[in-house]
Length: 259
Image (cartoon, rainbow, N blue to C red; front, side, top):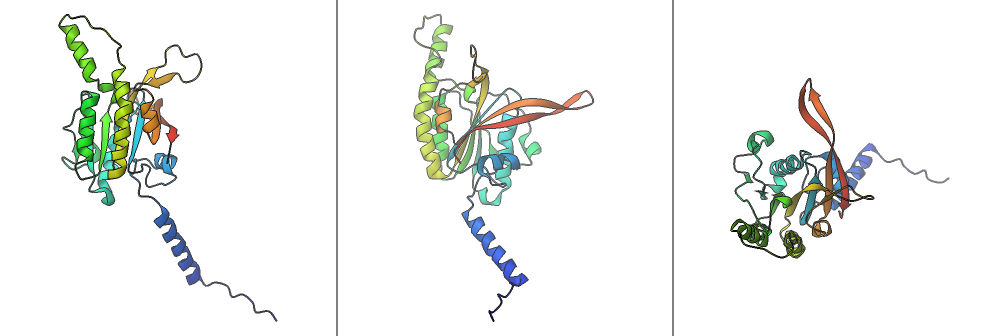
């Protein structure tokens, strides 16, 4: 008579489940949280993190679509995570249009987010970024926004016009050329230091486009090429309490995802 296979005890089943869970946890990558479970899942299939250290993220959106709010939510989530307590949080605001009380709104300690950096040109942004990446500590660096910075050549041209001098040459091409050069170097340094860079971009109407996308963004193709994630934000509705607008419904569309 064949010996009957003994059923596994409850203890054996529990132990097996623990071992499988340990393997899964070991295989999971340590990712920076975005502050949104759905966005984490869209980026990485992990509920607790979505941004891989060593990558660049491009947030593109209309005005008042929550790009800056999204970036500061990332800051807040990283700040409260014990495994990222050694990360520097740097907010480079080129637009000079952000006046929210960051510490109160996001529960951050005074000075946790460094807000004293303000790049006015793409050359200055390049210098500030490299300085942060070579500081010896990993960082989450946010430029708000790419549209808010010019180039040294543009500023020199503006000074000539202001002085009544004639200028020649193309306009608004220097920044796109610089972007292709600097992002190649920045992405390499991001990987070596396990840092992350968030670039915020404003949408622009794609004038004359009969087919395809109705919206575009400045900076040429470098932003798309070097970004691990490209996310487009658009307002699809508003939340109101009586006559007062208290929020917005925003659609996040992940157009590129290398993770």
